[in-house]
Length: 253
Length: 77
Image 1 (cartoon, chains in turn purple, yellow):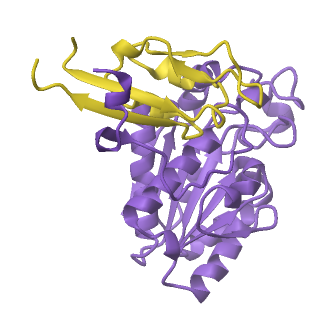
Image 2 (cartoon, one colour):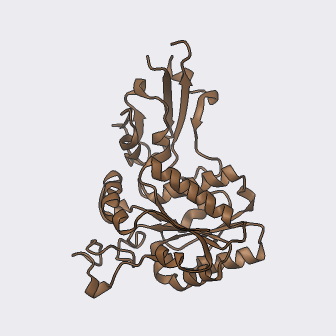
Image 3 (tube, one colour):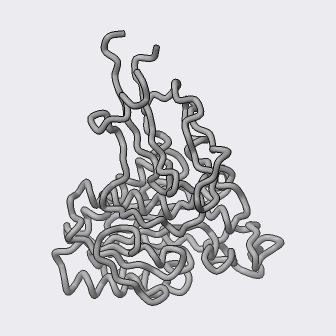
């Protein structure tokens, strides 16, 4: 059997979802953002909600998210994505609304908006990409940077006396009465990619059930910001990020 | 001959040569090509196509959704 016999549409196992368009993504090679974009697009196709989904793009590396996933998008001011999502969802309650935010957006400048949106229990899904660094601006220290982790503004490693403790936003949000589903996942291997996809699906489904806000944190890599190859970044994340940000559901009601 | 045969097609212009598929492949089918695409990335290709079983591990981890996977079950053997 030759390769040409195998490569036939009837033998297809996996192909790029049509919800993701052909525009080449601007992300660095091996970036976790791309994997999460792909998973969101796949879930939207599986749920058949392409014309009923509105995404809110953040400021950060994912600012161009609207170029890659073929749904309706709004672009929010820095950190204000949950507030914009609140407005969109209240005006159009029949739409699936999600925000897609990084740690500089959600956990730094947008802390107040995030906490109050979750506390009000808005029926939206929040996808939170946590790579422990300000990736887009050049790898500066973020609130989520680990103790001892090097960044361009903490070249000897973050220290508690100077910079305080890493901020565990997801744990904080799980304690609010407005959230219904709070989970932390990662995308560094196939098993975790599958779990993350399930979490994304559940969060989008919850946004129609009038239960409250769903938060999916995805512990991610930034190979350019961490100065490692994509494969090394995944290993480093597994050894250092995941012990500090343990994976799993924190709340599911 | 293996009972299950697989094959992949890489969108070489979309591939950024991140190497994650090469690491993820359980059958060690993939390598990065010595040739590069128009952006200058060494794209991924099947250097050992006979071993492919179409498990789609490469496609699941591919950040840029460059990989299409095909699989055939050989009933005669």
